[in-house]
Image (tube, rainbow, N blue to C red):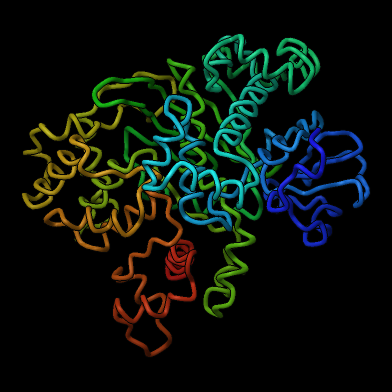
Length: 502
């Protein structure tokens, strides 16, 4: 382990601020900090079940990568790889948050740090400085910890061959994979699996061709409310939502080249703060990309405690939070898919929009055969829709024109919806398309960019829900009223919508 003199002060947190959470093993703080134990050389989650080390024998880190960079190794009891991870939007600046999301989605597996910095319109040195300041680790160290954690998770929770695990976790070679595991844990992958043993409950899933993993989250989490939102907007034939699960088909593409395809089912339970995820996929090397997109759809990395503390300063929102604790903002698999759905939803009911988008998927999406009932098609990609004939689907001409233009711009790289895109620049670019206004752009940003500050301030229901008795709010008036809600306006939107619905 490094000497303490070599650890940057900005890497460390004040133990006094988190001592009560550590003593209580509070699950709300799981992933918000990690505990480096000086006497053992391991780092743990704050919920670790082992005997609590003394306060004078610990150091607290902002991220698992920071603890690892300081020379601590992951605890085999609490398994830091199973934590909810660093909150999607931490106290760091926008560029750090977006870079973290891109790393989580595997950007550095096939691209350089220079390319990551360029995507964020920032210099490589400045990006590294921001990471050290806010996370206590460099982007490369964060990416390496990500690979290591996912590999360990697959070793413990699946019976996948080690070669498959190696490439699924983003390692470039089996030799490198073995070396990193041995250096970190002092054991080979085979020895690690023998210690833990593959859980028998995975046998049924793996017999059907599925890979089953457990994804943790920080409570509170109103997953029923999230599933209700997704169910009401589900695309028949592509998505299937029950009272306790969300499933859908998926494709990962690079232009017209399909890199991976399959489907997944995420199952919630009352028993613990986790989701059971089953994935059927033809290319296991893309597994982690699928897992991270599922996390985004379900908003699993959100820190509801911090969000609700901030929003509770507003008395109306405080009342809604007490009714709906743990409200999350549902994400999406594809920004293109949500954009089309939002365009089709203009001036029609939500259910009518679902019918229209389902027709589009059936005609232009490829059929998908699987054992999961109700999942029958892949949603078409922009490259397909850009040259598609949309006549006869019941879509009015102006909507058809907007859909074709969105598809064309996304196909040509003129419109992006990835995690590196800033909210304001996306709204400007999206509203530049004829037939698309700020409401549509903000709604798409809320779900496709995952930006917690996206705010469809012209939404009629939102205007009514946010108004005081006898008050008639204008969009500009609502935007002014929502200033104190920043940077969590999207969460305020979901709370107000739910409150208005009863």
